[in-house]
Length: 141
Image (cartoon, rainbow, N blue to C red; front, side, top):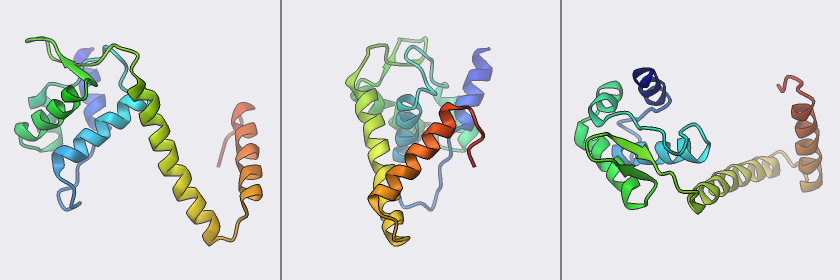
């Protein structure tokens, strides 16, 4: 079971060599997103450094640096030789990071809406319409 979890977490991540953003930072940001979105739960073990490095075709030191940055922020904790785990504490990080992600998406949506000459009230009405569909369990597309 643990190997399957490692594989699924690793498959949710992707780094791009030519992105202009350091590889460790791409990995760090993706792991933070997975934690904030709940895909990586408190107490869940992260894939071992070597396993993740192999799956993403990275140098193990790149993965180790991303993990170290997460540990500095107390988002993960190393348990001696047992591995690296998502921090258990109900941290304000999760809420703050979720808020940051939503703000980024809202900003993008607002810029696009302005380009389409969509007014804010029309955008709010569209959001409410889509939300109602989701709550009713209808297919949203």
